[in-house]
Amino acid sequence: IYVKERKYDKAVDIYKRASQVDPSNISVWKNLAAAYKKIDKLDLAKEALEKASALNPDDEKVKSQLTAAERDINILSIVRKERAKGD
Image (cartoon, rainbow, N blue to C red; front, top):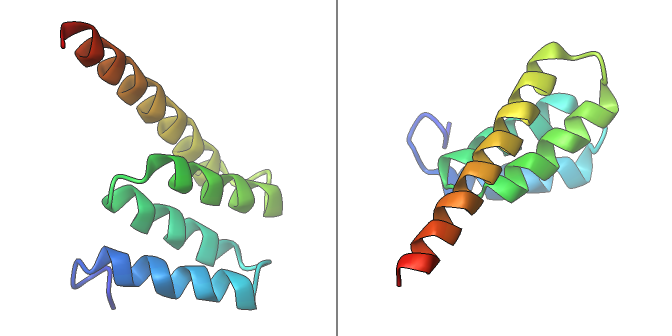
């Protein structure tokens, strides 16, 4: 419900609590990753996807999302370094 309402911080809180209650629920980790991504916490999104991947290493969607998260983190790192050079 919080994701549909674009209340991503609240969604993160709910999914974090759900992950503590049921850490073997892959959907919780995938949803947590999606919520983190919406608030630009890419490192945390990647961690959640890694946990989802550990639960089901054959999940192609999770593999794809994990690859995309790693790419986005690398791009962001390059952009930040370039900006720092310009300052």
